Image (cartoon, rainbow, N blue to C red; front, side, top):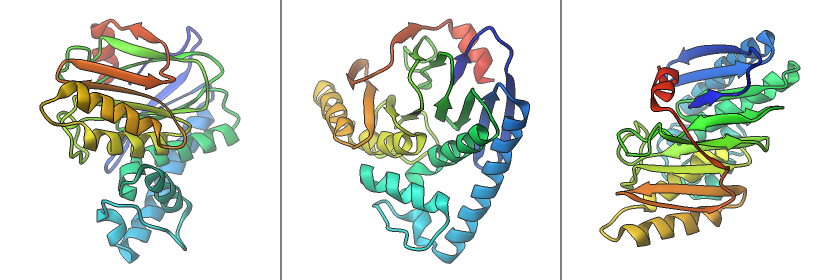
Length: 247
């Protein structure tokens, strides 16, 4: 969830296409349209690929893509690193591909959030809020992103519509791309469960940092918070502002 970028005016648009619920932000209006066109194109390519390869949609383990569209190949690559099924990376990869098109259109600020998974390239800091349902820290703390490109993804065993085998309120991963962050957040989230909260959090952080390309991990589980790696600076967030942005 993006809270702010800078006082300078930016173009922002909410866009929805089937399961893709996106917020797009840029300094160039044409880049926003480029992102929308990218999402439409790559979703279409993915849907056609799944029709011919239905196992791709339901696999819970990595699959190889020998001949397929770019979106499927990137999903498979991210999923292979994280050890999960390729659909765990779909939202993040669509965001990454949209940001690529925005940069081609000349954007200096290219941000695409897709259902909580977000890809960022920016020439100025970006503040984002942690969103984890009714967890105490949700919409009260966030992160200041200052190094780009970066992908941010959050998986939840309690508050997300996406499949998770774990029980954490939130697993947030910071990585070189949103696709990898998306897949890694799923992989880590699947591990965070059980009665020993401290051990579960420690195990999740350790697992996340073993995934090549993951920079940092933050986990919230039953009131326990753990983090490791290079997590961006934490900031306080006004919950009323965060809630307004979420709408």
